[in-house]
Length: 239
Picture 1 (spheres, helix red, strand yellow):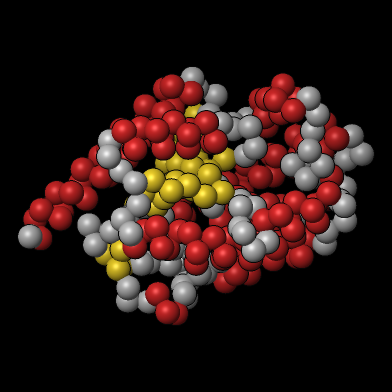
Picture 2: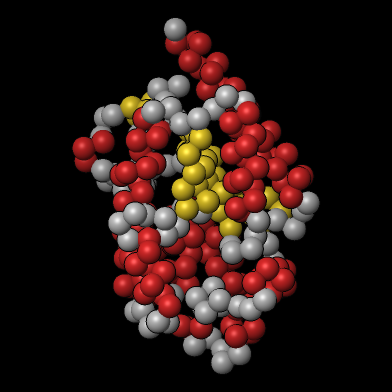
């Protein structure tokens, strides 16, 4: 269905009034919540249904993605600098990947979106009002899934997957605790709190990330199929 871009704020001036036929689907959640697996399964399913699919994620910008990873290795980034680096990364992907794909009719799968960035920044003391202005250029997604997982479960999963804990995912830059295990749980609890607060405002579809991945995938597919079917019906009704 052809429709105009809607943004959370001012948007991108030269895209105002332009239309697109694609679908933007966001999968949100903490590290080790199972997002990437769900995106992989969704992509395979959607392509098997005949849809052209593009996927995006954090730190994948050709302009600044590698620079973010290099900067984070020093563990010395100032809070606002980190925030602006990720905002630049998202803006570059939006202009060069997301919007062109949506205009071309693709289903765009976002493995994290501005909500992760906002939750992280609010945990580091940024105001929601400032963040809403900062990310006002972001388009409103068609569907937003949030995989809700208890921080204690995330801790076990992170250790099982990586064998260690990440400095930034543990919030060690915030001096929450000298113990990384304790800091991880405090920080991830803060992130979860901000996600839960945003859920109603932004229309998250909350899924239990502790469930079997197959069951989670089935729930996502049902919602996506319903949305795509309704979009087709609306197209047919306007012809």
